[in-house]
Image 1: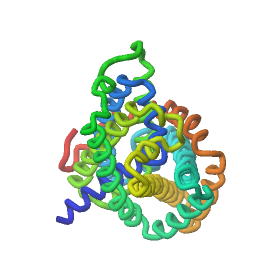
Image 2 (image 1 turned 90 degrees about the vertical axis):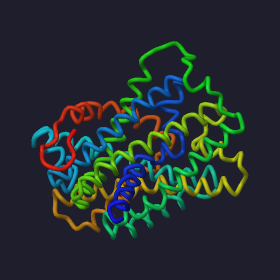
Image 3 (image 1 turned 30 degrees about the horizontal axis):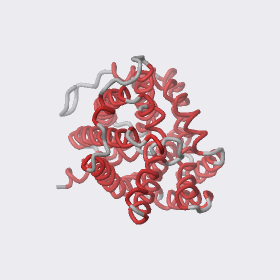
Image 4 (image 1 turned 180 degrees about the vertical axis):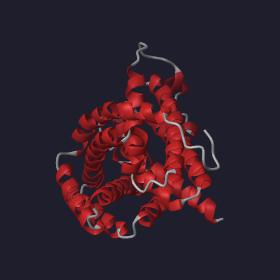
Length: 350
């Protein structure tokens, strides 16, 4: 029973780390998939296979080599010299994405509730500090609570629109635009930066849980679950083009269900943004702690202050510029992770 619970906690943490401000709001889905129409649907399937395969593979690898941070994993895969360059690159990317998460928490309060964006940001910072005092347990705790609710809401919304005849199957698979390969590049760049940044959180779990079956099934369930959520959200957005220009387009769709459901869903969006924010702060703090030996609590405070400064730039601007750039920078890492072989020890073989 304990292993089953841990398996779903790993799966929820995997999903929660990826499902951040861009995904939960729908802005990121439009950027990488929905703008390509039916071709975006194929891109999601490609991304989903890679998420499930490589995410699970890296969880098992981290567990086998007893890596306590992403630094140790990169040194094992790339060697010390190249590993240091990769670490610096990923740290820079995760740091920027964390700032986007914080900006997203402010955007939710401002656009959807008409409240001060600074209040949304301050609340996320306060909750993050409190939960991270519990370490990895705090990260898994919040994900285990938020992620199942997010999955349920996402599937329920997609199912409702299908039953109401508001989903046109032709928009999902028919190639209704001139065929080109931009969707492939966007799909690969999406999975590249999301997967690489998620590893900063997932790698420490491999060492702390120390059960290869839990890591394997947790990674597989997490990858499949995330793909399903991504596909449903894409379908809904594809059939509601009038919301595509909003900062939080998914929330605009949910307004169809009335103020109570809208309030609940926006609260869940905020929670999902927060799960990625807290996961990234945790991963970066562990990375710096393993390098410097600096006190964990002090590192958290420094990161919270710095990401707060980045969040002032603005949510929409950060996603439009940073996410595609990060995707291209991470592609080399993704192809390397595909090629790397696992050590032969353990219960699961690839």
